[in-house]
Image (cartoon, rainbow, N blue to C red):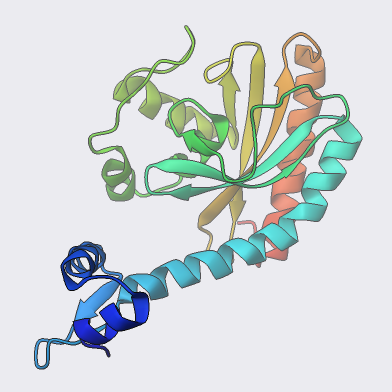
Length: 231
């Protein structure tokens, strides 16, 4: 625990500037203030984010071999994505030799309504969790195929649950089709998604169906390494 004067001295910031910063951090749970002595200490939000980072590092390590094999066998770009707030985030990417998709990168944030990864990450949430993610959500249109309403997205999520995978049929980028599948953990919760991106000009429907099955197999294989047991 530190007084504001101690923090000010260590950081070289004025008390007025520091007070504003501390209040913002406190508002978001990153810092707590002891009501008895007024001193500041680290908040529980840092514990939450720490677990998030550790979990992310673990699944990245385990997923990389599956993504690499899949990318090598198909020539397509593969991704691993997780949900953060109301967006998806790429946390791993393997570039395919036949791919010409340069828009993706590790750390890129994804609109959940317009991407296959986003749909997978939402599809197996509880009704309450999904409602919380979509509260106030803006359904931005990126292409003529983008789902731009809550009703159309919920219908797509039901279809995703029924089929076991999600499609992005040129909904986020013109000329790009993506498939995504869930990654389950030992508690039978979907904690991430694997995806494969293709160009419509290079991959026909038959090839896409083949890649889809390969992706499903990879997703299940990765899930089992995380302790998931099929029911």
